[in-house]
Image (cartoon, rainbow, N blue to C red; front, side, top):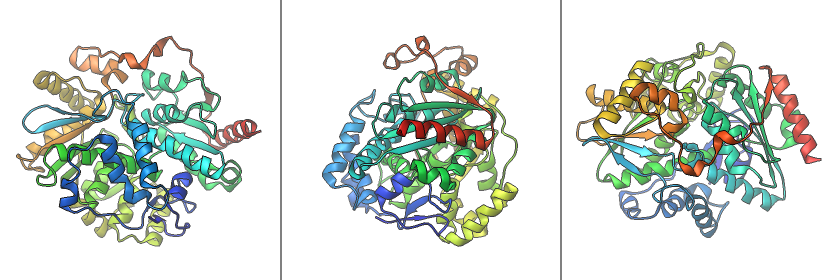
Length: 471
């Protein structure tokens, strides 16, 4: 499988190269040159497989030429044999129409574990093969940081620097990062927003003085391998609900667009998805882009769903590329203009391409709280606020006729409610507790570095500490 950049001028890479590179050298994001396609008969044959077996089947076309079938199967068994639920991503029924897809049974209680545990193993496999080290630099609005740190902590060939916006992640999210004691883990709290942290990371990848010296790698969803792993749970859930002989709709709490783009990939592969509902909070750039064609940033508003407090959604570029005729030069010009003005209008081709599968809904904090109350009252389920945004969008889509009444609607439950206990307790009067597998999170000492919000400070910290670690 060959991988091309959304901006058209970076070298074409194989899966191994794209995984280790993360961001393309021209500032774009890697995608397969073409989508693999399964027939309905092939999808039916996937029924009844374990999650690890299914993962190996779905990922096989993407890793072709870089991993053998036996290597891939061994990786999937190693990754998915150690989740807190034997189904890995179980479905829970809310009523005759609505379902939850629980994605929080990994070690850090968030959907990011499903992909980042795999990415950690892939890094180690490819670095051993090349006898090299990798300096991972990432930005997190909450869950990516802890999941990435957990996936690579203590590994010999990786050093990880994770930037988070100071005071803008939940206490559980922060502690899951900052209480990890491993010599290859560096937590950085910057003054500013997630978007500021994300800009710093992208600039480091585009800065040859640091990128080439440290061999930078990405764990954010700009890394294609992470998205690939997320495609699996769309197949896993849809098969249980009758696919390919029945269409399924998904509502996805969305910030950086990676999770919902994985659903788009599943649809391109032949999975019978009727609709992908992009659920945003009041930081609604994606809702405006999909409903009005207006992709313009504004001030980031802190909310009870901090992982979605994002203005610039990196993975949206992948959709614009694929829906816009895969014209890398045109997209590069479009994104360059956006970088300068922080505003752009989607082309007619991009809007039309997205409209065939995507719709969107915005939820404010009151609507989010009411969704938590609905789940608790009608199905005795305690859900986190991000999942509440998704559930609000699911309920709204049925009411607005965006999804047929006989179509199952699956809301992605992206985090365990105990990661946001204050918000949950305010909404439903119940304070969720952390699972025992998390251990004594609040009894462990925190370690992190606070930095100013400018790029140069972050860059210099990474360069100095990574270089010192490498000797």
